[in-house]
Length: 151
Image (cartoon, rainbow, N blue to C red; front, side, top):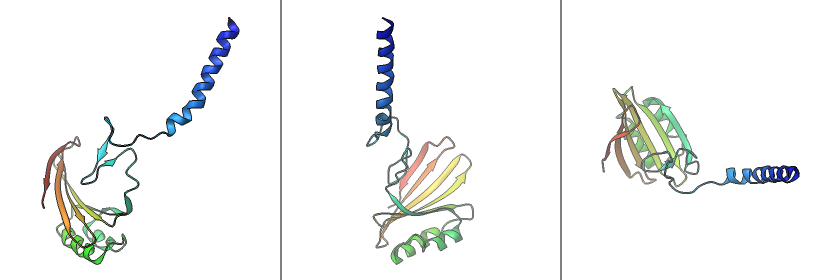
């Protein structure tokens, strides 16, 4: 009886150890029920950080640094002009993020802190310089309290 219990225990441990690496390496695909996601207009899984999307980024910039960084992300001349007119509206308290995606789209986000959260303006600019803008606000808890597509 002791041998049976011992071999049962050993075989169970071996089975667990053999399947543990397989279970850890499998990734789930799609939007998960209890996942954490962020972004607009892209839905980015915060767990994987959407690593396949971005090719160049400049984050947490001041207004003057953002205008200089436009050249470094590889934006087209039309995108640079559209982004410059958008960034010119930033105040000294505004943080600017510039992201260039693998499909050539440029996303410029301007965020400023408020009394109970923050407000962001997100402009998506295609290679021809055409853009769409969205305004969103989140409270201190991180809940979306306002979303307005400007065009």
